[in-house]
Image 1 (cartoon, rainbow, N blue to C red):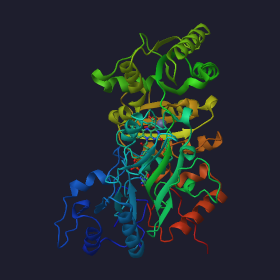
Image 2: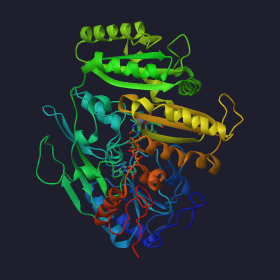
Image 3: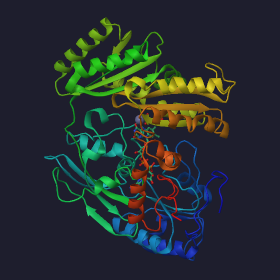
Length: 505
Ligand code: FAD
Ligand code: 2HG
Ligand code: ZN
């Protein structure tokens, strides 16, 4: 099997090609309706290939696999039996959550079996005293947030894909999102995980304890492992108390320098109530407004080169209002911010967030998008956008404001409060000319500025070959040794995450 999509990749010949006997075996483990396969078996006809398309293709329409079998288990025991079989048979497996990943990690490359967690979506327990939620890995993030909201708690993470992404996918990508500034990393809020290892062993580590210093903290290895070490089936996560008051401001800012000054002022003056500090540029705003229809409008009278969204979350309205108003007065007086609008009700909060959260979608509606999610120290963060624009202009691939070039938009936005830039390059089409202009240029730039080539989206298929720009040889070799130890046949999410290990002579 070869792939026109990935001519540079070769299918690993040590993986078995799926047979109808394998599919029959899976149908014995799962109920027949939980197996989709283009291979017919004596007890079930073949599924139409189109039905598998959603599992073979990613959210951006950039990656496309050729899986012939989708498995949708309902229990951890079923996941265990599937992996035990795949391990013994050398069948490669791609775990899939909500399939909203942006680095090509969640879809097969060749004919790997897809194991979707869609049917594993039960809440197991919630303790209102500790705020600890235990649930299946396939629970959708937004449903969990709605569930804990009923008990006055909040999920410690939130992101634009919340309506589709799974908590297991969030954990497997070590997702960041818009509450990171306030509640920190999943490495802190996840208390325990239940994981099925590549050979089918169930690792029972669903601790609900905040403090536990007994041995290696093995769950941390699976946070951000992108399905390469096993399948997360259960999650224990601590949900903080839900703030009672939220306020959001959208500010118009004249320069990136002023974005930074506003950030410093926000940290100093909004202190304990600040819950998000996001920014986006003119080009992002233009794309969002072009695609928003009646969902949103520019809340400011004039156009600005940069926009900042600040959210505060607290428990006393008068206190928060006073702090926010004083802060706004100060940043406007000092000239950091030229214009701004403060939310007055819940629907305005939704509208302001809509402007920020739909940028990712607006870019892919504008054209095929190269997405770079990177960490860079805040002072240099926007320079990557400027330097990329300059490079593409010099190469004759881009001209600001013109639609006649290979690249339509070079846009920057992100979680500036976490030093996390999203550089999006919107092209007319995905092409070797554009990708070779961008890579490795962007990764070299990041390495030169001591950044990270992946802040929150992970490595997937996209960044596996470029890991060396963020991690040295000893780190990469140690990761490869872990992978070899946990998954000796390499069946879990192959071709991704790590560069291929060099064979010793
Ligand atoms: P998938 O896309 O299905 O899978 C992602 C990876 O995890 C794959 O490698 C897959 O094999 C593996 N995986 C999934 N489930 C499991 C499991 N149970 N066990 C083992 N491995 C598993 N990301 C952010 O960090 N911050 C953001 O603000 C953000 N905003 C986004 C906005 C939009 C509109 C979109 C489309 C994406 C956004 N993302 C963001 C990226 C994406 O939503 C996250 O990476 C999310 O955590 C992926 O969850 P998922 O369930 O969709 O996982
Ligand atoms: C966001 O913060 C997401 O909006 C998506 O992480 C970023 O699409 C992107 O590049
Ligand atoms: Zn993001």
